[in-house]
Every structure is written in structure tokens, then in C-alpha cells.
Image (cartoon, rainbow, N blue to C red; front, side, top):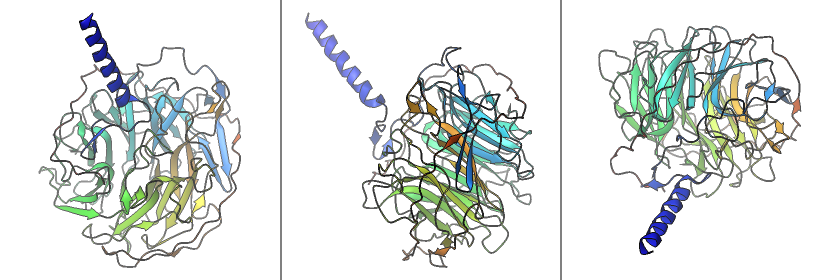
Length: 554
């Protein structure tokens, strides 16, 4: 009897601990400010065949003013797939032919499971019609999709194998219609929340090189950074990055210098440089680490995205060849210093190769209200130097959670920003969760000389059998001429310094929310089926690696 009681107590304690760690929507536990669990974890097995894609409805086309959002994750007939879910989209655009675009996303074949795969779609008519052939590998648990492209129009897809935290690169020479795995499963090393970029400058020593970094605490093998000099086929042995940055992105200047933007999951942000990563004969080193003030802290578990981030740190470099050439820009959605709710989209710039950065500037121009969320802030830099920024925004919502996609731009290197424009209808981010209480962790934009191509997730489609809206992936084209052309207003000092500079911003007038309209439209693009590949043998869950003494989160 005594042993039975003891066993029951132990069992109760274990069950309680498991529920604390794994309850949906609960932030992972932290040690010294850093998360002790990855944002991506292996969960449910694949859904049984025949339990999804049983019903369809007309694909969603959602107009809002001069802007139109087109659903991307549609079936072979161009219809919405009832009962699935899709989020965390990443976009690639062919720089030689803007009609060819591909988007990758986390594909949940049924909202009843958290088992996700590497979904992808493509368009040959600049986003008006989309084809969703399937996933990179059937019944292989993948996540954290990141797409990029080279200067000749090849697309690349970095995908994480969640059970091992190893990644691999896939390449498409057909504008995303079909994909071939370049590195073997897990051959790109990688880790949780990985990101990569391609050197697109023909005159750079590292032209065509791919650079990748990830959260080293949850890595495939070790390190935080790797490089490929052969288009993703092979990757060097990983190395560490100073300060162990997380949840960020990277880009390459026209001189081949590599810049990484990341954070400590709190209020510390850095821009980290390597001048020799472009040299294939040496192991890359990092010769400059600059602390950057973004005006607040990264948020995990906010009201609009309880199981995910309010945004990552996005870094982009101007390669226009003009007066702003090699400017470095960083954007992230942060909770302002001193606030305990809400986020703002904050921007900084460097004109001296990352040595110094400007004071943080708030891009969202609505009156300060810490109950409002301006989340998933990201940027793209056009070949002519224009900066586009998009984000999800609750400014017009009485409940402070219903969201719209907003847009602003700068034509003078971030000194001034155009008044914000809503470019989508309103939607709730709190429905359609596929056993994960979030709508992803990021959205993306690729800019050209006249506008930007945006991939984002929204819940415009309604599933009557579930009584909820569904998460789907959408494409929208934004541009300064897409609606009433605003006049930029002064927002920052002409010379970036580390000293805070007073700024003036215009106040936007709330715009009435249009009702999304479902329109049946068949796609004329033929369906291409990806070649199935064998399922990789699962490996044991990686053990978090020791770090130096972690920094406390404020």
C-alpha cells in the first residue's frame, strides 16, 4: 500500500511537470533569460491518409482599397482546402522575371494535428493565380521555412527537420514549380529558428555563397553559423558567433561583407560583421560586433500570438549603388522600454558599415497606445534603394487583437517614412490554430523598383464545420503607387548617431475594414507533383548545449 501511494505521488508530479512544460500557449521555461526549450518541437505523428483534403471551397481573393490579397495554399483546381492550416510564409521572387514567384510555408494537412510539413506554391503571373503542388517530402516533419534566390533566378528553400534540428537546402530552377534537394537530409547542419542568405553581387569574391545562422542552444550538432560555397550542396563545419545571437536574419553588402542581426531574446540586439566569410580559403571570423538600441524587447507569448513571437530581427543591406549604397537597416517589433503590453515596429540604420547606428525610430505612426500590437515587422530593400516595411497591426481593432496588414516605405534611406497604409482586410489571428497557439513567427517581403511582393498569413476563410476561420497563406503586392500616394514626413536626424533624436510622425486615420469576398477562380497553371523522397530515420532529440553564463532578461 505504501509503495502504491508513493508511486501515485511520483506519477502525479511527473504529469504536472509535463503539463506545465507542454501546455499550449505557455511560454517555454527560461534559464537566465534564454529559453530552455526550442520554438519547434516534434509532436504528433502524420495524420492518417484520407483524413484531410476532403472538402473544398472557392479560393479567397480579399480586396482592400487598391490592394488585393490572393490565397496561395490552394488545391490543384485553385480552390481553398477546407480543414488544413498554413502559416509562417517565406517568399522568393525571380529578379530576372518578376512574374515568377514562390512561397514556402508550414503546411498542416489538418488543423487537428501539429504535424507540419514544408509546403510550397508558385505563380507564373505575378501572384494572380497560384499552384500548390504539395510538400517537399510527404510525411516528413519540417518547419521554419526560409526562401531566397540568387541573381540569376534560382530559388533556394532552407527547411528544418524538427526531430533532429538539422536543415537542408532545396533548389528550384523552374521558379518554384519543382524542387531538388541539394544537401542530404540534415546536411546543412542548422538549428532552431535558422535563417540564410545568398550573396547576389557578381563582383563579390563570395558571389553565390550561402550563409546560415541559427539558435545555437538547439542545434543539429554544434555551433551557430555555417557557409556553403557550392550553392547549398555541402556546408562547412559550424562555428560560433559572438554573443550567441538568436531569432534574426543576415545579408551581404556589395563589397561581400556579411552582416548578421540578432538578439538575446530580450532587449539586447547586435549587428555582427564578417569581412572574410566571402573568402573560400579561410574559416570565417567575425571582426565587428555592434550593440544596437532597438528601443525595447523581443516578445514571446503576446496576446495576438500566444504560442509564438511578435517578430524577429530583420537585417537588410542596400546594394543600390547610389548614395545609400551599403547602408545597413534593422527592423523588429519590440515591446517599448517601460511598457508591459503591445509592440511597435522599430527601425535603425547604419551608414558607416555597422560601426554606429541611428536612434530607434517607430515606423507605425498611430498614436502611442501600449494596448495595440504592431507585430511581425519586416523590411525589403529595392535595387533602387527604396525601403519597404510591412507588419500586422491591431490599431483599428476595438479588441486589440483583430489585425490588418500595414505598409510604409522610405525613399531616402530611412530618414523619412510615408504615412502608414492598411493593405488588407481585418482578420482574427486567434482562430485556425493547428494544435499550436500561433499564426507563425514571421512574414516576409521582397522589394523591386516599383513595389514589394508580400507573403503573410491570415484567417479570411471561414470553416463552417469547425465554426472558425482558417489559417491560410496570402500574397499581396504593395507599392507607393498602389493607393493614394502619401508624402513622407521627417522622422530622423540626417546623420545616424548613438544619441536619441526627437522625431515627428504623422497620425494615421483609422480606415474602415472591408469585408473579404470569396471568389471562385480556377488556375490555368498545370499542377507539378514533387518527387517523393524517403522519410529520414528519426534521431534522438538534441540536448541543449552549454553556453557561457546567459544574460538576464530585463
